[in-house]
Image (tube, rainbow, N blue to C red; front, side, top):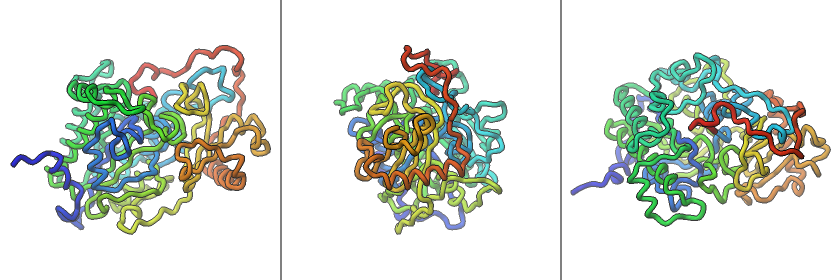
Length: 488
C-alpha cells in the first residue's frame, strides 16, 4: 500500500509515537526563517487561499505562539535583533540602507543614522552556539553585511551558502528553483547529514516570499485555477508561499530520514509582516510599520518529548527571544558581558506552561520608511519615527515628531504623540484609547520612557531644515538598495 508523504511527516514531532529525545544528547536546533511571510499568509493562521500543508502540520505537532512578533518592521533590523538577541537601539540597525527614505521635505526631523552591518564585537547567536560545541550553518539570506569583515563566516557560522550570491546580477531564478528555495534547502539538508553525529545549529533563511515573486510553473498554474479570497488573490504570491511550504516538508522529512527528528528543536517564523500584496486583516498595516500587520508573525516551535503537540500560547514573544531560547535548550550560558534583551521561551514549552519574567517587549525606529501601508497613520510613509511597547494586552505607540516638536507630555490631549490600543478587545488597532484611558496611557508611557533611557535609545531631536510640507514631495531617497530584491 502506498503511503502519502504527508502521513510520513505526521509523526515527525510526535515524541510519544517515536520516543523522546535521548537524555544525554543536546538537541540539534533548526531555525526556518521566511522572508516577508505575513501572519495571515498560512493555513494555520487562517488563510483559505494560500496552501501551507507542511507548515500547518508542524503547527499541529508543536507549539503555536499566537502573539509572536518580529523585532522590527522590516528585514535587516529584524534579523539584527534575531542574531544579536538585542533590541535595535543596541545594534544601531534600524532599516535597510537609510533611515530617511521618502520625500525629504515631508520629514519633520533629521533621522538617526543607520548602520547596515552587525558589529563584529556583538557576539551573535551563532558564535554563542559554536562556543557551546555546536557546528553552525546559515543557508540563505544574511542581510547584515556592511563593513568589510561582517560576513556570516566572520560572525559565527562554520558554513554559509546562498545561491543568490553565485550570480547576484541575475533577475530571476531557475523556474524549478524559485527564490533559490530548493538549492538552499538542499544545502541545509546536506549540512545536517554531514553533521548528524554532532549537535548542530542550522538556519535555513529563505528569500521567499520577498518580491520579486517567483513560483514553479506548476504551482502558479495551481493557484490560477483556484478561486481567490478577499485580499488574498495573487496566484504568483500563493505559488511562492506554496513552494516555500514545500521546502519545509523536504527538510523535516530529511530530519526523519536521518533519525534526528526526536533530537531536534525546530522553530519556524518570519522576519516581518506581509507586504501590501497580501491582506493581513484583521491586523492593521503591513511590512515596514509597527502596527500588528507589520510585526506579527507565524511562529511555531516543535521539540519532541519537551513540547506537547497541538498546544498554543498567547504570551507575547519576539524574535529577540530565540537567542536565549537556543542557549537554554543547549544548556549553555550567555557569553560573558553579553546583554540579552530577549528571554528564554523554555518555560512556555512545558505542558503546564510557565510564564516569562518580563513585563513588556519593545520596538524602536527613529527614522522614515517610504510608501504607506493599509490603514496606516500616514498617507506618505509606512512609518515615521516611533517607539512602541507591548505590555500584556496593551500596546502604546510614541511618535517622535509630535513628542519633540509639538509639546511632548504636556500637550498629549492635542498633539497625537501617543496612540494606545487594547489588543484583546481591538486586535485590528481601530480604536485609539490615548485620550479615553489617560491613566493607563501615562502608566505605560512612563515604562516606555524608562526603557528608552535604560537602553540609550536615540530619539531624533533636530528639526529638518528641508521640511516644506506645502511644496510637492521631493524625490524619494531609498538609497542604493532601491532596485535590489532585498529592498525593504
